[in-house]
Length: 271
Ligand SMILES: [Mg+2]
Image (spheres, rainbow, N blue to C red):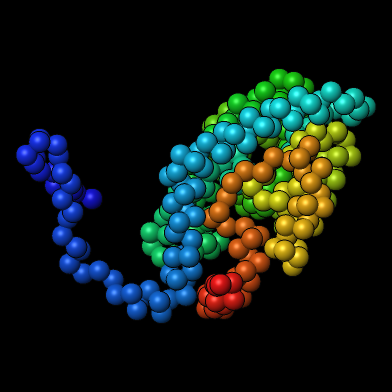
């Protein structure tokens, strides 16, 4: 956006706001499109995740904590070789550019645009992720990527990870979605052969499927119940853009139904 700069008396530039756009989209048009309105509910989240130094720093901080926990947990001896499990989206790969594109069009997630994005294999690494996983590798850990990307995304995902120099970016260490978003069975498979010393994810379900249930205090009761194991074995990274917390509010219906559910949530929670 062009902003005219004018010199004033003390020679400090003063920003002059540009004239309003001649033909802004009428608010009613957006309001009549459930997808557009749902996108608007996510604007701040996408802006924060993509552009804020706070998100950038929290991601670095998460991987700093991961280093500390890894060193502590590797002191425990186990006959199985050690492994670290990481999620992919918003944990090691940053998809916020995809979310920015959607938001700018008033669109919301759909599989076609998502596959187009992952096919491009252009996601950048989440800050701190590559260095942490290389360090874990140097300390003797095997890395497993457990993701709910599906088999169509296998080649592009490996290409993207490999281009960013992530270790163990190969078929054997990439556990894609197999019919269910529940990662429990895939985690158990890794634990059969390896001592899992740490997990990293942007969703609490990346640690334990019990977090799918948000019925008691929006899932915070489960956080409290599992506090000790969460603290020791799981590092959670920020992601306000999507996830179980939003699904629990908006449901899985049509765009119009989701929009209605989100509106109701705000009405019911207003004080
Ligand atoms: Mg994720």
